[in-house]
Length: 550
Image 1: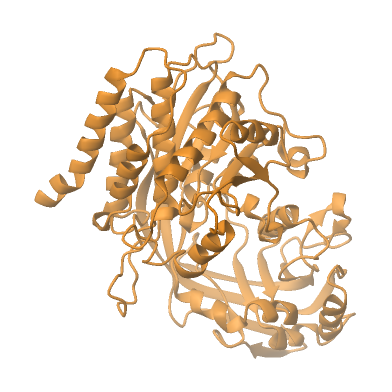
Image 2: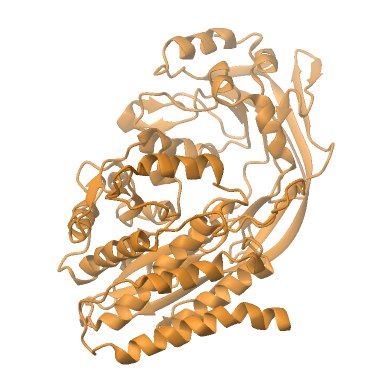
């Protein structure tokens, strides 16, 4: 009880300061600015050791969620969760592969060949069943992609109904990075839609140069998590893919013993021509895939609040700010003195910016035409699961959401002079970002690392796939301070502190002035969207707009 009191004290102090500020502010102060001390107060609480790294489903994350709810209540924001509350509580299932249970047996010409788990193949647990087994014939489907706009149709002329598809890991290099990353992300969905009952993914020599097969073996001991739909099924989907395996390149040769094209020849072609996409064909024989999994159930909340709009025609439309409140918890390896992954920059900083942005909207006195939702999502570190649950089970009509402004991991450690807006090239939000940044003497720079496809790697991506334009701002690589290299500071954070206990305020020297500027820019982005006559539009040549807009 004493510990809980100590945890809640910073929230109470922050609330008192915020309340005092609200009383002193003019009723129609349209020149509201972000306050450094508010960002600091939120950040110090959310990144404190007491929250134990805010692991999804943990007590620490529950306390963080209560803190966020408390801030929303103090600001007078309306609940936008479920059942009249601020919470959207999500049922999750955590699955583990049972030791020594995974089996993979290839049968052809009356002979059987069993592959060795951990040496020749790996697999993950099943979210659907504690025991699963499937035996089916094999079809090679190249990279397993289907994108006519890029000349890809790896399933052309192939019948994979009731079969196990065999595909190469990765993708042709000539695909644009963001589009290619998206297409790689949906390989399982395509196979499922085609009627396949399993997937065998082949490790390649090209992939080995980037990430060794042995590295992937380590993750077989890691729990996997998914959300459970209202129908009680993992992600609400009926079971179709009954088995999966990731097979090393050398043992994979055995599946192609009598194939029209030898696997070595395919590997050689993709090595010589990274843009090459091999054609598919049926393979001899069949494979049996079996495993046992253990399941644990838990829950964790998204937290949502709304500032209602005032325009009779537009108040039922929403600008949605997102920021994930979870992190990765406590390090299991106790060799270090510091075992708590505090997640100061990932993503206590993003939530702090969102909370201060919410205060600015409330205290500005601006009569925003559209409603503004502030959505703190859980389980981002587990695969964007909290945002994905919201996208599939929204608490407001999905078509009423006009845009998403995502706040994930702003590295507030240097005096940035530019910002990078992932998604800016896909919708009119790019112009909105430029306009907002220029108000604070800040330029918008192009993506400096397009090969990373960051547009597909944070919570906004789940809403993009529902047709909602989104933008995700990051501090740029230039600095206002002479002699300071922003890109170097940013790179050092990722090299030394990302997903480590050193992402901690005891280590970081946070630049709160830069944090306030970053918040002001994000506020202006939302302010522009909320009050524009027209909702944001996908650009005509945007792949994501063409794919997902209704």
